[in-house]
Length: 395
Image (cartoon, one colour):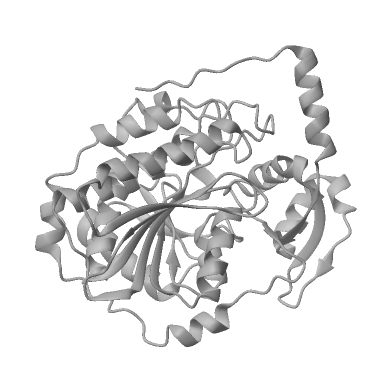
């Protein structure tokens, strides 16, 4: 275990540092649905006075200080009970879903017929490696997108994935740089043996946030949100290597940067993929996987996702997991899946419980591993779903 060590600077230096950051503060252009805008405007009358511009898609755009982006995240979290809710855009931003829709005229084969292979993987899964990853990632003081720890954590994920796959020549790990912030997105690519131009994506964000005390110096261990999601992805990847699986299609595992501050990393990446006309045939998001709700073991988000793929995911849940679940809605773009959906790609988002029963500790210093008894028993459900999704969609 590699526990991060932190240095506490003298007050005078901290003041100089904060003054320097304030001097560099800039306005970001925010895009938000009228529904979300109305909810947070009701809660914050100062926000209600924000000048807003309605776009052609019926969305609102307005300028907001980058230093206050966590305040915006907190307003959404407190009033809509989930993450996301807005995105950072450029002045001339246009989504590319028409380009993608023309590219994806033929939907994937959503048959479920690989039970022998899927269940053989179930026999070899382990929770201990997932536990170790959550322990490490939540040991960082924060993984906030502008913090040194947040930048280092993403590079640690990159190195971890490289170590897991070091004996595979068909696998590469890259750090994708974004404009506007230093935290990088980690992309692991397994080259497809038959259809390398078709891409299946399994992803989750690597950053964290404390919306009660915003900024890069706050405490945000983010055990469930979203070290647990990264742990699930890492164990699926370990299983790929263990079983020497050579996919027909190209598979990508992605740890997104800057999800907690406007889904910035995934929007940037999805837009880039659309502009490059990349043929992504399916996207699965893992964000919040290890908290157990009172009523259901899992919820499948129905809005800002793809209906046809959701039916496929539902059949995977019923065939392989046999747990209690239901459809739920965020009513807005609440995680990285929405970025791919926005660009016209087929995305799904299974979550650990329904919105009204969500983890009360996320986005606080209390989102720690002890809340789940230092184990990934609940996350194992999502691990199995991810394995089934990868194998069945790839076949």
